[in-house]
Image 1 (cartoon, helix red, strand yellow):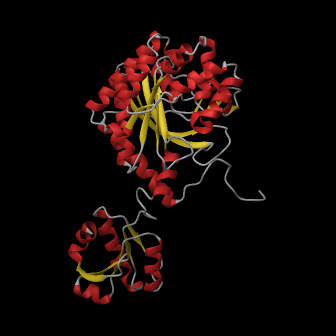
Image 2 (image 1 turned 90 degrees about the vertical axis):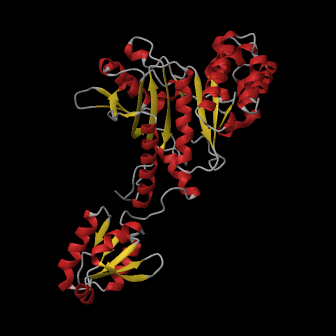
Image 3 (image 1 turned 135 degrees about the vertical axis):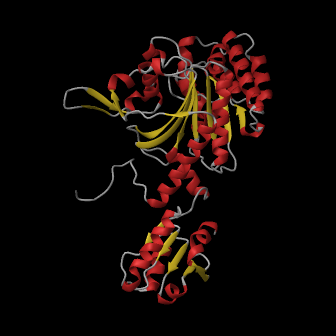
Length: 434
């Protein structure tokens, strides 16, 4: 290779970045398990036919290849379609409703951009086998609790329903076939703005008056009860839209019961979400700190699993994009700022003290303290302190001849520069409590 580099759209994550990413995943796992979700892992490679025909326009982004046996395979595009395959394959072993979470990489052959990569990591949470609005509310509540636990200072989860956009299209005089064009146009609202969406609608053959009416309806704003009341009045003649409003009202009331603050969610008729498999509730979390788009999203997809299971299995879920969460949290200074995993660095005063320093390191590790041991006994103490500091350790510990004679340890706080003599028997407790 002329230049040593990673593949475009796929990133290396050095230790400081990995510590933040591990913090994100651990936090999401804790929240999911508090909600009773169980872990699942599936392969990153699927038969191509498993993924094909499920993703609409996005299908062109699938990475496909042929293995040595001539089988047509594909890299996982997301974790949702593999979940559908798992539910169908292991139907006899799963007790529905089933709450599951999964974490791992997925691949899309798209143009890389900030927060959008060809290899990306997702943490999914889904409830399989329940059509109840309580299931929808639990997923949205989990989203809100997780972002709060990660420290996001201000975010809003926008809620909508696929049948609301269909109802808006039908109420504006469009037939069912034209509703798909409305979905695609409205999905670009945050990127193109009202004028851009209007132009897109007109280009797809929507009459000017209908386009104006669609834009007026999708731009209704306010708190959830107020938006739902206005939508109910303006879409009263469309039966499916009325049912969608009732569903969103039930979800909103359940969010109140689950203790989610009203400022954390709203009903946004302009929200479409592009994936073809959504059938009911759709949602996205946004923050002013990420102007490129949503932080994450999800929705209800009641028919996807049925394509594998040959029967309808209602499901609702969401996907946290770890890469996007990482980029925003790094920008905001959220989460751990450590540059390494070590808390303590045990120096070696000289070759004669090597065994004693090794015993001290072993003692600290046995006490559950992440500990680095100097590997070069002849290195000057000053250089050892610099190494400890560069590797992010909080404390440097010294065992010289005097300390060995007194059964003490010199404990230096590398943040403050303060050092003190500590009794050898209490040094582990001192480090742990600091």
